[in-house]
Image (cartoon, rainbow over all chains, first blue to last red; front, side, top):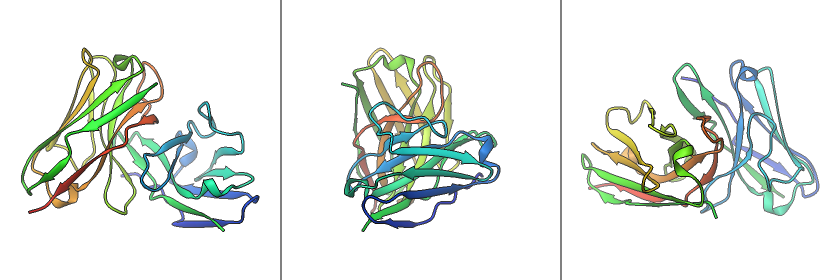
Length: 108
Length: 122
């Protein structure tokens, strides 16, 4: 089955830019979605179709997808961005959605 | 307000069964595909099962195929997950999730419930 690889952790100082990567074979051919999950809460959709934002998601969050890597970029990081982040795709080979293992973003 | 509320979780013995329910409100339920996603303690997200909008084609993760059955009742805005032959590996928070796109199945989820806890243990 298709595998999405995320770094377990990323650390960033407030006000700086955080980049969280998601790797997969020929990932560019798939639509990547990103979710944020805070402790004890349900996930929240941040980005869909690589780079589109649902209403209510701030512009300082953006997504890109090229080659084998998709990237979630969070500009001007705030304390409230401290959370787990998951990428997700639809794997046509198995007819199943697949999540990455998640990245813990720590705001220093 | 668009809302999903799960129920039916609890403690069950290995080999047992449980039926989860998800009550939807605030949107035209029949127009959206729905899924169940679970999260084992301290672990990441795992998609479990999905059903398309309308009549409802069904989809299952390999880990639950043959044991779990997803269904929907569009008349009452309800989503269900019948879980049989449960094992400790099925212990998790189970979330009900709504597809973001009307009249399609994209498996991108814009609304999630708060989850219901399933514990499989003797």
